[in-house]
Length: 237
Image (cartoon, rainbow, N blue to C red; front, side, top):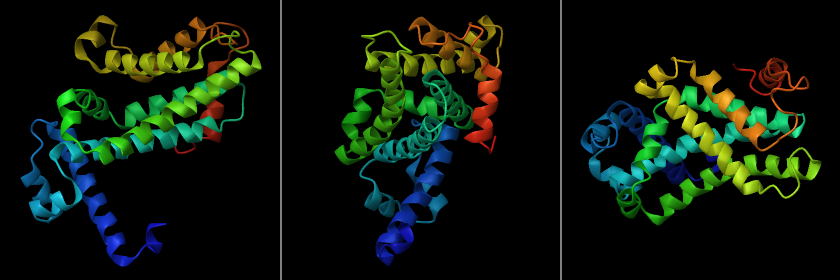
């Protein structure tokens, strides 16, 4: 626990958390290109030099913000993965967590897209990249474990490649988030509510892999499943 660390180490962590809180706010408001370290230094009431004691580059600060939020997503996935139900119901709980994250952190996707450029990664430090990869891997592994369990249970056809199913679900979730927030696509799709659009895309992707029970079958009562997910896992909603 942070409270049990030596005072100097505790103060350093608290200072870094303060920097990241304000950096997240500024990145959400201005985007990376207009993200100003002088303004960040004023906001946290430390010198710009102090920022560089914690982060080697501007890119490291943005990556650390992304890692911080990715950890929040992974924590939601961890909670969802403990849902007591069939593998398809557990997958629905992960889907709920993904939609909850998208609604609570609407600016994070834009930051993530910026992180995809090679120039960004070249300017970020190996340690910051490693920490980001840990949180990305956590989210992937929670989904992949449920997919693997579904194959073992016979809920997915034998020989189904677990990692491919996992990637397809992640891609579908991200893609539906784009469609639900991009103005032109919103107009073309009829301005559907984001969470409903993401849920529909997630369910249809699971159906495409023949993950039983199919969402269109009489054995699938999504409203009842979602009600249980909220009541048992995400009681704050």
